[in-house]
Amino acid sequence: MITPRFSVEQDEARVYVKIHAPHVRAQTVEFDVDEDQFKFYASPYYLRLTFPGKVVEDETSSASFDAASGDISVSLAKQVHGEKFENLDLLTSLLATRREKLAEASQGKERVRRPIIEEIGAAISAEDQMAIMNDEDFDWELPQNVLDSASEPLVISQTKYGFNEQYSGFLTHVHSTANEINEVDDPENASAEERRQGRVAAEDAKFDDGYYMDNYVNDEDIQPLIQYKTEYYLALRKIQKHSKQAGAEDTTIPSAGSDKDAVWGEFTESEQKTMLDLPRKTHMISNRQAVYLGLVDILFAYALDYRINVGEPTVESAWAIGAVSSSLSNLEQFSSLQSVIVACFRRGLSYPLYRNWELCEKALEDVYTILKLGRRAILKCMLQIKDIFDKHDVYYIYSKIFLDDYCVWLQTAASEKAMRSLAHKLRGFEVEKDSTGWKLDHLEDLALESSESEAESEEEADAVASTGDGLESLAEDIVKDSRQMESLSIGEEQHRQIRMPDTVLGGPPKKKLVQIIGEGVDEDEDNGDDSRRDCSTTENKSSNEFYLE
Image: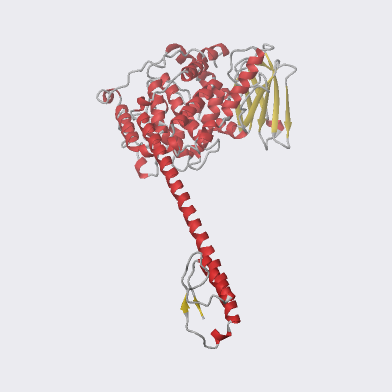
């Protein structure tokens, strides 16, 4: 059977379901309403929705079919007038069965340590569902014990990785593919400690002192990225402003149907289709805190790439996100907020195009903003990341072992209270540069000293060049004046030749004039000849030597 595309809206009294089922005959359409469940059937389509509250089929209920568009519109009455149905835009949650929701509820109440059976492909009351969403209370700074390499083989026979550490076998031949994200030598057998040690060693080898120093002092291209205001930041500011005006303290995104003008980030048609295509799974989480911390790790990598590319993903975005994320590149599972943030900063200073501390801090602020906006904003981010990886010929595997599960889990079992708690911790979290293990302060001092030295050298070079240009200009002026005087002297000589026929007819031999400052003629010349006296005077002024014919 085919699950059709659909959307759900509501008002105070009714729930409206719009189903896209083209090429069906109206006579074959069947509906069934059973308390909180609504079922639709028209071959080859089948749809079952489980609402957060109960609906009834009464005389006011209706259904209509638009044959041109293939859309079927159904209107159902709420059993409790004025009841607000939460999360009607989280389609995967609506598609969950009652059995799946009961499993999630029992998990939230009993804290299963290691599930034996996980149901795949198969309701709970609204009160139980809200209890799940709000029952998490973690100490984010308390590290949880991770099995060491010696004891781990005694517990499990094969290494697990991915979301909730439930996958194996997906990376058996990873080294024979063009996977440049993976840094684990033997992902199918490496223990958690071996993966962590390998990650740290790879980061130390990748970190480049010169690259970091250059990005620290030459940050003309980086500063605009730091000042860039993301759509998440603008959305949060808008909601906070609206809440302040309304006198409310909660700044999380309103759920769909509460106030259409206040809802931010409605899911696009493409995102809705992606949610419909997600696997139907019930997640029985064995380590909830690790799942939330892994979410922070992936969101940081996404936020850094988002800021570097000013909100427009590129063909390199899949690699960039995977390389910065320790969860994806090294299959690491974190045990404390401190460890995941330090790892984020280390990789953020080793792999991206721009490696700047302040840029990493802005990416961490973006993660806080996304978490503050709530599950809906987080889900939109994860759907965007999934879309980026799905389009890659090699990296799509990370959607299978991480992103698909996160997208399902965020709709069905993620806790709003845990998200708010995590956002609050990130808001006041300060990362020390020394925690990276690299001497960043020392490198920054060296970079400043080198920059100042280069600036001084450039000033001296400019001064020398300026002096040289002045001398060269002066020399050019002197040569120019000399040539002008020489031209003038030659003109005088030609004029004198015309007035002295005796010289032209074979007079006395050539004589070299003697330059005497202040005297008009050579002492051997005739003082009575005015023309010669004038010519000699011109020669003395020009300080040039030439011969008279």
